[in-house]
Length: 96
Image (cartoon, rainbow, N blue to C red; front, side, top):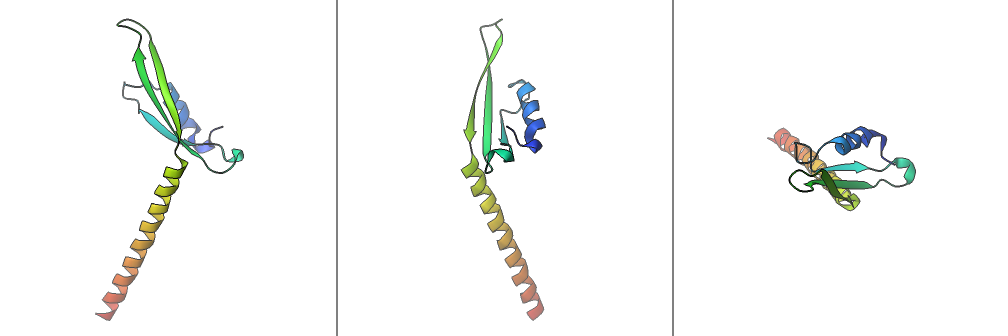
């Protein structure tokens, strides 16, 4: 169900131990064969069942597709704006 480019990162995240240097969350995509691009953020926390008890984990998975689309739109706008500034700067330099 995972995007092929994200499978290794998700596997490493699932094997990591939260709280011992492992990242608290991971963003990944679903497999493209399942339809339109969807982004998810998985978060995991570790808990200990008493002073000598075993660890157990809780977590959430959120659909962050709208957030990723907004970020990408902002990145595209910034790139277009930078290109226009560079073009206008070149035009002003030529006029000077």
